[in-house]
Image 1 (cartoon, rainbow, N blue to C red):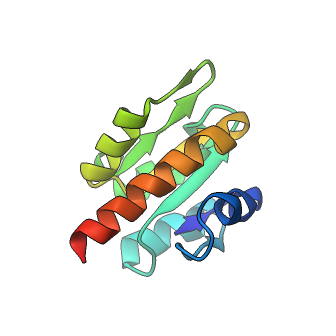
Image 2: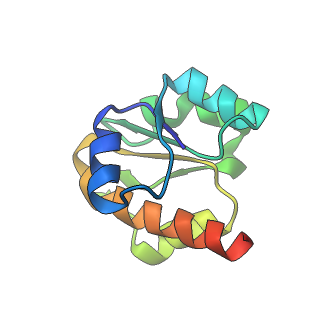
Image 3: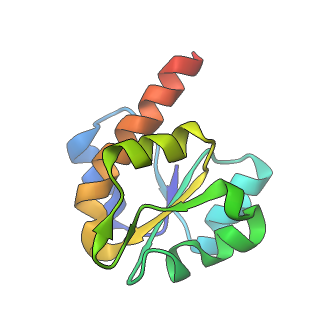
Length: 118
């Protein structure tokens, strides 16, 4: 999993120690890694949860592979997040202030999908 926000690793370590591999990359590096198959998922954060967090990913991967998990004033439900993962989304964006609420749910959904594929 790639992420553009350095705090991503801290949230990950608290909620899912030793269960996912995370690298901190820029938005373009993350989207290119997904496109090339070098990474499985990308997570970005910005003020709106869509623009800076997902703009490059939408351009390189297409909207079918991206999902905004939060926007100002609204966080996707656990069911919505799980559906995005089940539907094959690879790049996820969220509002900076929602990271600690959204990431544990996203991580659970990604791990469940991974374990179901094993």
